[in-house]
Image (cartoon, rainbow over the protein chains, first blue to last red):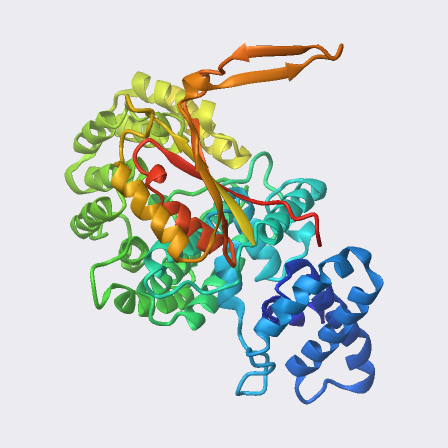
Length: 406
Length: 116
């Protein structure tokens, strides 16, 4: 039953934060209200308007806490001012549910004044409704470490007074990419960044998709939000084919495309046109278009590589980065042959970030293998191994290196 | 809420001011801060060569030294204390400050409030 409250939790927390202007108090009273609901509803039935019930209960619990807790009483005068200012905010929305204040919270949790590493954790905690131990497990860090990070971020919000507000339309171009970056980093964290042996971890990719779906409902007109959601769906649709039964990663060219999630692909494809329409394309929209071309292709040879290269060219002008230049080189290799791709990869060799990025060395190794330059390929695989951290990645690279020697 | 804007000059010009902005830029900014009704206090500091450091040792004796000179790349050149509703507004004023341009930067720090 607790899972039912995850979405409600984010809404409730956002509404209470708006009301009290204090994230801690909002969080504690939201938990109190949900606890009360869990005790009350099974016995007495779910109230007609669950959102309003939770809100009323949470506000009463907050008053109790303010009376009981000295640290809160110290802030009471200030909170009263905040509460009066928020008085104009509706207590319930037109549909009778809670007013949706989550957009404010998205921007607060992704605020550039917070440490970059804390933004994703805070977003998962406040908007996805994950508990601190769940967030810690998701990022594979000890619970105390995560608790400290979340506390530190909340303290900065409170003490430096980072506001709970939606940026003005003219500020959006500066602020929205930060929110999207947080969601995208949660998504990629779900895929790539785990270190050590593969563990049962909470599915961060699904959480990111859920958050992006909420954000898109709140900002339906923002094409890059749509583009990001499309990109995540189109990549996540391949999840079942991304690892073999032993847990080793399977690269795109070797994936069983029959195992791809067709429903999720259709969902993603349906979003791509609106992500690209009505103005110059954004980085997530273009990346979604690239993912769409992969998902639509029957196999690696019939993939529309010229179109993919063209999209990478666009992407390089919008968001120049060595990683994108590297991916473009890999696409060129499939369009024009391994020698052409290798020449482009070698031209990027001076970039220190790519030197530490194991897929760069693995991509070089792969092209060198295809060109029958095995000793150089072996060197490149060894370089990749020095930078790969996850056990599955290391196992795959080692297997490829061993295959060269035999 | 009060915030201090600590204005760090990166490259200091011959006149001791930040190289990237003019006296007129500063006068305009100063006027804007005062017109907006957010000004609490603010000073610009004299050239770093006039600075003197004092340290009192465990024995109570004072050690006075000339400087410190450019041990750090950034040199505190002045400050404003402004009273604005929240950090976003403070960051906006920091971004408009001439000292934030070029090699300079402005550090925004909330003023601790022990009165509550």
